[in-house]
Image (cartoon, rainbow, N blue to C red; front, side, top):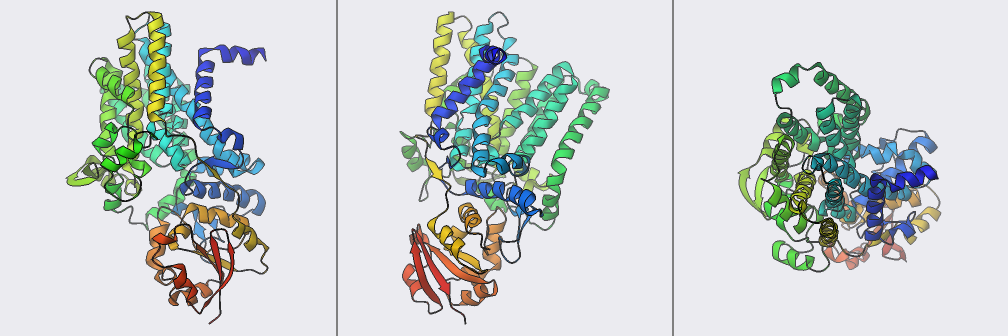
Length: 565
């Protein structure tokens, strides 16, 4: 206990504890429902990931079968996990935790630990860099380093990813670990820093392939501008040893999970250019007042989102809070030295890549090709990146460091009391600006219809309509409760293929769907009435079909039995 208390009293322990308290408060009351609820309000990608986190340990530990193929999903063909985001960190590496608890606990553990770890690693990096600006004022260095960690850990990028259910993109700590390991190795040439960089690369990739491509494209720019003499650097044996160690770590951990994707990539045309362009950032996105804020977010969205419905969260993630933006821009030319210059160009590179293959002004494409278009052509797998706006992660990280440097320069001559008060105000202001409102939780319990299906005897398959509600993470997740095969699935590459290849199934409630469903052993059709007004058929259209018989209504699910031909 004495050792624990000693650690907690250390600056690092205090910083981690502070970031932990902040994330608990910002997501309250999630901690009270740790094993039953996740952060909402959506049931989309988060439920798809929950299902995969349940499936892998279920397949490995309970059924002893290949977890990469799910025979009861997209029945009777079976569903390959590589048709969507696999995120092996959560599905495979954390499988023992899921097996011992449940997938909801694992989901929330991964979510909660990421904020303090991401903030702490940025804090440690900022502490190293800022010490050179004020070596005589250690307290100010610690204060501004704390600001840097908070600006990143509670940025719009991370908050909106949490709300959107993109758990695979929450472990940003690994991207920072890769950068920190590289930066320390460049200073000290220690083997352990190489290992840290390699682990950051590998674990980031195992969380999301975006977190492989982001450091892969950005860190070489930082490296080239940071080393000084490139000739000396290349001739140094330690350089090649470090590169070999990183390659071995990344290869050993990532290749087993990358091979199925490489096989799939040979048969895939990649993400269409139009989609990759649409899901890119615009320069305006970085300057927006938080579009997800409960006070002014609605106004921002009405002005800048010219389409029906709410602005997608992907267009909210680049937004820099006013504090980080002002101090980051103010410090841009004032922070001198090789590492700051390298960071500036790295931020610029990440910013340009976040704009995607075609330049947009707000959501208006201007037809100007951008660097991402070239990357899509020459880098293997890059044409499968749909959302280039996620490169804003590194912009947010870099600007957090810049803003901390600006704060330190601004407060360097201030009294200690003014320094403390200013940092508190800055941190509180950025937390308020990035705040997404009261946390909305989503219950993960089964629907009444799932319990009813589970009680039905015999073996049969299930289909759900409208088709848009079937091809979602929640519909696949709920199938784990009723234990019946489903003929649909969901995934980045799967949904479009399903609609194109199964026009007969999609034609429901037209009778052309009857034979296609019967051939796949479907007995019951679920009609989800939650958003039926957006479907291309009505409940009355379904009732008029002579080949369907209404069985029961359970909540928002209408259950129909398919009559034989």
